[in-house]
Image (cartoon, rainbow, N blue to C red; front, side):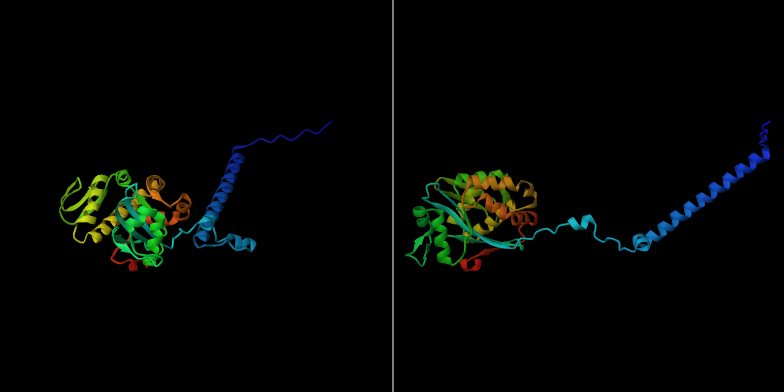
Length: 291
């Protein structure tokens, strides 16, 4: 006959002892957990290297962020540009300037040239810039100026009066400092400006440049200063986002040997000049000052 299993009756005391046992187990685990977390935080705050302590390896110092960090490109360049406003049939140059741009200094130097002044290149007899341009165009004029003044002109830009006005209006006008009151009347042109700084539209700025070229005292110097102000209105941080549109506006409206390839090659320099603006400027009196 099989032996009967003993029956165990759970008493109130047994239940009380079991609950007390579980309580102590939970308390001990909780205390150990708190101590472990606290110790880890203390070690971490003191730059304790767990990897080195347990595995004998150094902690990797370079993060992905620092590995991929790039240093902004700073352009180093010196360029001279011939800029002029002339009739489409090449019969008259209304005004012309040589513009030197230096990076990373963001310095601009401008020399105003007299289109009717005779320049003497070593390869031939003296002719005026206007005569060379009428006969041969921008490229030959650029070469003649390089030879006469012993300078390197990197690129040229030529705009008709209509193109010049359209470009100025594209920027919503250009702020120009007018040093004295202007009352200019010549060849059907009528321009009245009060002294001070004001935004001139394309037509007003074109007439003002003619006034400086024709009759103003120290007109060459004042025209160079006006060119610097025009460049300052173009190369400004607010135009960074639309630099491509500005380039298209100029290349589509002006006669120039600046190409899309040139822009891409000089993109860092153009953006730097726009982001930082013109930091320094000067008016040149003689071509030698551009060297």
